[in-house]
Amino acid sequence: MRGFLNDVRALHVDHGLHPDAGHWARHCRENADRLGVLLQVCRVSVARAQGVEAAAREARYRAFAEVMAPGEGVVTAHHQDDQAETLVLRLMRGAGVAGLASMQAARPFANGWLLRPLLDVPGALLKGWLEERGVSWIDDPMNCDPHLDRIYVRQHVLPLLQARWPAATRLLARAAKHQAQAARALDGMYCAKELTSTALAAMAPAERVPALRAWLRANAVPSPSARKLAEMVRQMAEARRDKNPAIRFGRHCLRRYRGTLYVERDAPNIQPGTRYAWRGEARLELPAGVFWAKRCTGEGLDERLAHSCHAELRFREGGERCRLSGAKTTRSLKSLLQEWGIPPWERQRLPLVYLDGQLAAVPGYAVFHGFGVPPRGIGLRLRWQRYGQAEDTLWG
Image (cartoon, rainbow, N blue to C red; front, side, top):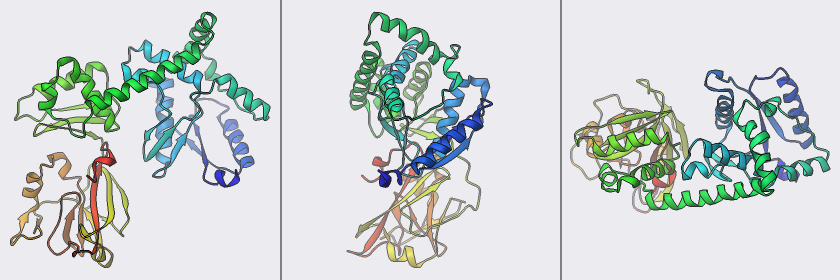
């Protein structure tokens, strides 16, 4: 058990919404010390104007994402009762199949995973298990405020359902699981690594919104409202061929370029002259995505050069020229980016690999003359993963 706990660390999020918040943090510290688990206390600011419940949740999950290391999983104690409450709330909001799937036991999140292993465990059973072992906990007073939607469902709606149907909580949680299965089936029907305006227009009208919603989910992007989705479908499928419509929603933007749909997450602008040292790392986080390098044989960038030269990642400044392997003359990088069909808004964010001050490669597109690996030599396959793009689309 101790060896397992060495791989576990705890995070307490202080929302700053209650005067006893300091006491709660000390309680978490005492329990973490007793278990020998490292605890990090993260204080967040909650924007009350948008509704305390939603704002606190957003701040909490933002804190999770900020402290996660690549490949880690955030484990929460959501249980069967929480799942039943979530389904009722989603029903009252008129959610579709994906929304009615409620919480998932495991889903991609930030740099790793969000895990909820207790969704099949009734809340009373979990509470009894803790009491038997003398584990203490603190009840947030907000859990008694019926003005909050979830608390109203907990105090009034579910008890009424359970009075008539004693197994209501379990049955609601089971219904959420059925909706999750249906959502996965729909994803399989509609989802594609690439979605085009032509394919969208060719679908039956009733299929277009589900197809776009499934494609967004496949790209790890939260779906907007049904009304917003319908407007997206209309613009992406019906805009003239020479137009490149763009629709913002939340922190993302849906765009069309040369008939293909792209979704991007808000990212800071790259300042002119920005450079990042690259010391052969397999993965580098950049402002607008992730740079990858995977060892291979007989292809890619020569690994020996990458390690012996001064390696940097830079961004376009204009006027760059390069020579493709096997070509006799140089070409402008601008013309190559256009030829490769890279959308204009991505060209300034795409990292360029420089070795000793010379443009050596464009991740995912080309390794230039003089920098490729010799036959049977060890090379590096380079890829650029923009935020919102699934990793499994990178390697082919």
